[in-house]
Length: 308
Length: 308
Image (cartoon, rainbow over all chains, first blue to last red; front, side, top):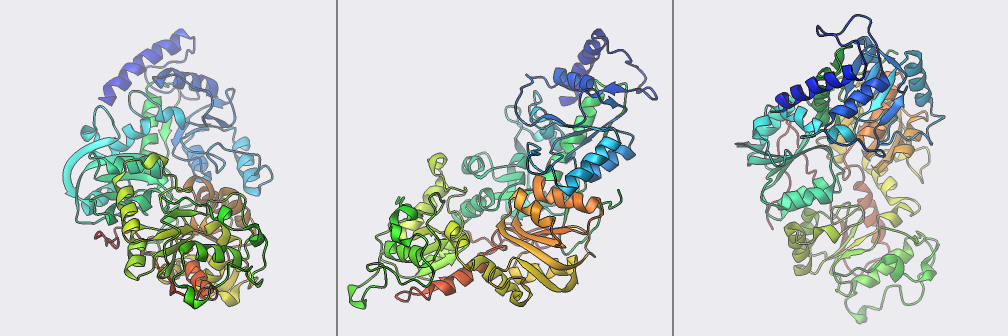
């Protein structure tokens, strides 16, 4: 379903791009040494999200700007320092990141202008002629379905179980909570997922809210008839997870899986690279996986590259 | 539902009172023959004797129950989970002093819980057992010494490693590795799913802590001091977690451990209960530890009680 739609948009957008005189459209894939400006890339993104582009919100260039010459695009879940390094390694100097660059949702700089790490990061991106676009609100706003949800569902192999009227709800073949957790951990390549509920409980009605999710909205869904397991990215222990615990303590059969923020949304950014490739043919669009920040004491790992 | 703000209930005389100051007439311990003590009297005494100046704006208030109820005993806990309330009722302690919320949001907002069945079940349980729940977290944070910091240091056996024994938030512990520290914290604090960021083999001796929720800027500032590791209850993954990961990615010897909200502060309520006994001896006073709601695939065991 999503594939057909994306292909349709692709053809239209290429025509639009040609008509606009962008030129350089090569039927056979990216031309060697080709560049596009970051501004042209953003214009095409605006034409392809399928809905209005709204000012306000957090979507903006956190590094570089419309004039930056781009030779490759990397899509990442969060613009960590690791992601910047991996993007360059993949030949990409533009990063399209779902989450911030500067450690707060709006990439607020007021309080960190003198921060030593901020200076190092800024120096690194400037030296390497990079552009970073924070692509949060409008990727969630992708029509007809939130881009993060498209990618996560595909990675889970559960696209066909999504409800047509509300893609956050899934009706899955019945399985135990433990089996569901095992599938999610393995399909999404998660290390430090956390679960609340009876491992033997049968679950089939899933509500997914990838990324951060708050307690009060979650409470209404868990209190309704359409959700026996809620799968989210991140929440504060004292709101939604506490509600889940309490609704279980009230005798309701409910379960909860908290994937971790990064891994809960990163597959949506894998889809973002596919989506971009549909209307940006001149330069490569690559998905760069995020490094999950955490490990649990029983399985310590060190994946972070410490060389700059 | 009673909704009496402690700040309003407490007379202005309590403002700025030193811990050792004698209670004003009428708010001290009543003669034994006056009979059972209502919750409001204990809450007022607590407010006055804590030495914490009354905050003009606070989340602290009576969040559930009838403050005229006679108190049979006092239970101190980190979050007023349904499980925690059941344990308090089973122990015959109907006044619950809590550090965090009861109704699944920072400000115990009931507006959007209209008709929620878990809300009703918890409220009915509170009524049926004549419980009174008073949130006191803001003022506990203002007590000197801070009971949470003192209790956590005591629980970890770190009192002698504290840079300031009366404000134990920086420690110089015997050198260990990040992994060994994480394992030891998991055991001591009862956290099965704690998560660490950084090199497992990093030598660690200088430790900074923000018990409970760690906001972005205080966390970043602390990570920029000479500490090797930052311990928090919870911090957003797109803020301090990402910041620490980026520090590691530029070669800085830093790490972070996210303990879970209850595990990362509740031993402080044990210390607080011990202090509370020094001002209340009419009824039993005790601490109720909360079981961790989460499990992961290494230990798929549910600890949340599902029986009312």
